[in-house]
Image (cartoon, rainbow, N blue to C red; front, side, top):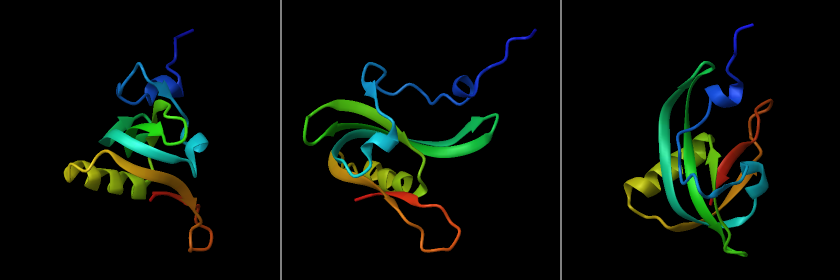
Length: 112
């Protein structure tokens, strides 16, 4: 039987501070962070299509723990790109899930 690649292998993001702990975005909702470094990846191609996402290196304000996460939310990606373009990092921010005002649409991620 041929060896098939897994979804995780096929959609793995590029290396970004590989020695830091990686935290899932869901664990960071409503947690005050200090975003110390970031990169926006555009048109990342996988067998499932292309997408944009932001890789974030942060410390948790309360504990000082340093880690990384990935966020594909369009609003977050656009704000992170503006911060990178303006050479504004580090910045404090809290990632939230905002209910959509449009019936039938999913909530979206924002960073304030």
